[in-house]
Amino acid sequence: MIRRLFSSSVARDVLKLVSGTAGGRLILLLAMPVVTRLYSPEDFQLLAVFAALVGTISVAACFRFEIAIPLAETDDDAAQLLALAFTAALAVVTVLLLLAIVVPEPVARIVGSLELAPYMGLVALGVFLAASYSALQFWTTRARQFGAIARTRVGQAMTGAATMLGLGWAGLVPIGLLLGNMLTVGAGGISLAARALRQDRAILSVINGRSMLETARRYRRYPIYSTPEALANVAGVQVPILMIAAMTGDEAGQLFLAMQIMAAPMALLGASVGQVYASRAQEELRNGNLHGFTVSMMRRLFLIGLGPMAAAAFLAPPFFPAIFGAEWARAGEIVAWIAPWMLLQLTVSPVSMGLHVAGRQRAAMVLQVVGTLIRIGSIVLAFLAELDLASSFAVSGAVFYSLYIAVVIWGVGKK
Image (cartoon, rainbow, N blue to C red):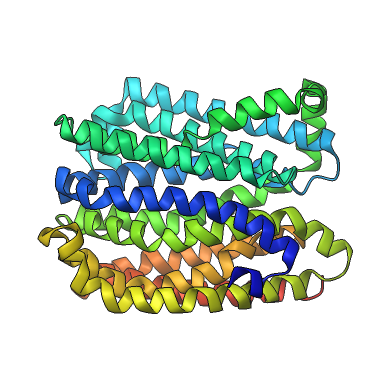
């Protein structure tokens, strides 16, 4: 289907990434029925809070210099951007480590989970692993070395699954769940860093302080506009999860499992298409075809995702208790609610970089702020009206991504 729906060159690059991602997701999915029996919904609720913190902070830890790497006009600029991304990440992690040492309990209380206090140091480490892996992925994407990225995804999944299963069997809960999640999202940075030092040493040798400052000045739109945009984007998903965790019992754990399962198509295809799109969008802009290229990709993504998402919505409620255990029946019900949201997200998220390529960073930032308000507002209103929080959150996600599609089509319309 991918070969039919995409051009041959794009399909080849997508298939390289999909193969690695599919292997990684299959490993995690096969492990999950055992993991859900080793760890309780309460453990998953703590994981939801942990992942929310790591995901929210790590997405902005590099000050978004990393997303400019595949779009940079020269390799020199790309190298300086990589150095800037790592410098920013190290600064953020240093602050997090200080907070973890000095005031772990007040920070945990702020996010509504005192149980997280002993693990605040892991949050800092998780942020560094996730942020550095993101920066190195973009560096590798620039060279279109998609096979290297695919291999890291399989390696990460194997490492994370083995950690969750091994420590779970040893009775080391919930730390096994937290460590496994952390390694699943960031352990591949080690191999990508080794590859960059081995193959790109000459390019990286141009990095110096003066050039970094000059590059930071020329690419300042990314930290100024894209950092708030990224924070708003992630906060729109993670803050409601934190709110649900604080307002309910194990509902956040049920929601987290449902989202992890439904995120498989995004991880399998969406992220892969997004990296290929980022590596080609600048060329399509120069050729005057950014709008056609973007809309074509969105249409194909929607067609690919429609069947699997519809099947998931129909099959999850009866099958979740049998696969993951009777106490996870609620997660299957949540899947049916979030399927439309995930389909629309799959349609637009992989091509959202088009707004940056078209110079619409400000519009992207405003869009994400509005989206955050929509999704957080849905939780507040549902709580006040005594409605179901998870389903209200799911509906708000579908509303936001419908708006997202319209803004992206507008943003690349004249490019």
